[in-house]
Image (tube, rainbow, N blue to C red):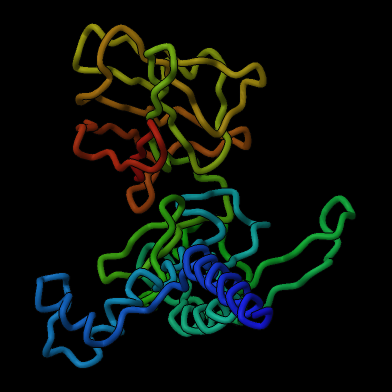
Amino acid sequence: MRNHRLSSVTLLVMGFCTFVFVGCAPSKPTKPSVVEAKNAADHGDGITSDTPNAHITALSKSQLPPKSALQIEPRDLTSMAADVPLRISVNSVSEHRQLPQLRAVAARTRLVELQGGVQIPCNISVHEKKKNVHGEFGYPTTVPAYVGVEPASKLDPAKWYDLQVVSLPDDVVPATLGVRVLEGGGASARFSPGSHPTLAAIRRCARTDGSHMIDLDFSENVKADVDVREKTHLDHEDRKVACQLALPPSKIARTLHFKCTGGSVAGPFQLSVDQALESPSGGMFEVPLKGRKAFSTRVDEVMWKEYDHGCSILAM
């Protein structure tokens, strides 16, 4: 009788434990089977049942690594760049991908004169990332991997050059800013070692007070004293919009800021820069390949390219 009672209790406890384990244990995630993937395909979930390994392809699409952005130093349309190292980098999320990408980029890199396209002999090499390098102020820093370009002879400060990657690897795209996209799918950056002030880009950003800032980015510093208001003009076709140029206290600036108020900035405006605009070293305003001359253009709304929240850009 005693044994019978113990057996009953034992069964009761075992039954309770079984209930607890079954009812409370976390369920393990299960991977979709090949049959499930095929069934999803037959119901129009983006997989075709006659595609080899279709289930694997569908499951891995969302796991593909993002493409790396290619950047060039100096940035496109930079002048007074005699002391700027010529470098190309990719912001890959994986070091294992980065070096093969850089080697592919190095094989497609060349330096040419902008006018005439004559290729300049260069030493092109891939540099791996360096850790704990002492920076400009003596603090340890990391130098990312890059492609270095060293011209065989000194570049002429009177000329413009184009550092080109004639085509990009499939997993590399041009950076949003500072890089010119070539017609054949490559990327480049135009620069000059000497003083050749030119307009590099126009940026437009909305402000919290309802106004807009339209910034003129130049290839180098320009004189920005009171006379600059007679040398740069921004006239919106909507006469309700008034754009006022702000002068920097230093009277020297690489970017000139126009604050526009009084209406919708969306819409075309006329921008002009006089040839009399000059750099602190005396270089007069010019347009690459066209020489030292005034510049004027009509900026339409469709020409802007969005690059940040509330901001758009027009590269020259």
